[in-house]
Image 1 (cartoon, rainbow, N blue to C red):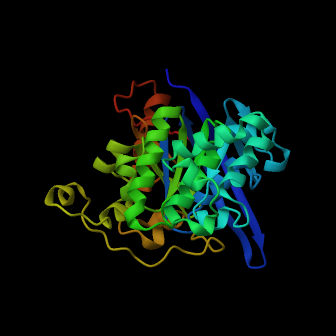
Image 2 (cartoon, rainbow, N blue to C red):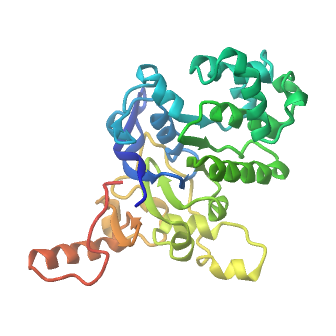
Length: 346
């Protein structure tokens, strides 16, 4: 049986502004099992990074609950125990801004060792060399360099080493390759996958690059305007996408072969831009861009329903199945279809 390491339950994060309330994360639920990679995907403004920031404690939730290893961790980062801060780490999008330019690589990596007392002071040098070797940077060559003297990919390797300095269980990856040249993105991804296998790490991988998730994630979750649209195991997700937004994203992925083209959904034109989170459309928030919208979509916000094992979607196209199953249950009729139970409020 696989252990659940992280549970996000009905999470909300709202920000009051002069123009109105920004519902950055609006009632989402999902879980992560030990050793897996779940990809949280969406356009800019979808709320995926805010979700990660709530998990790490940068923002306390407006409502809802976050559980890590069975314990509530909804408090702000400053109020968390050192043990919790040590066990959940984050790799930020831009290593150029997340590394202190006035400190050498050795000094940067020594900070978490000192703060969390991972090793005795006399063992710091050995640990730093081990961390650099782990991320495939020659220790003697890089230890005394400063961030401005190394490339973007090397900076991200240092950031990854810093995150792993405390031997965490869960690592949040916030667009870890989007600020890098294409030539080094693959190297960083391969390194992350190797480290996951070697150290039994669990990843919450935040990205806008859906194609990247095909070979990286165990499951994929799609966000749009603060809400989850669809969650599915990766193979199922790419073979049987259900939500119109998911299909739109998948149809826009560039392909290089006829085999890849055959697997893509029919081309769906992207309509307009993602609306402002201050002025979210009524009903289903995607209806203003949806090619399959119905009259009810502008009025009623759909709920998550399960349409297969581990595959849930939030769309009115699948709500009738849920209603029919509920009626069958009330009448005492055994439902044959596995789509009879809703999962979460995503």
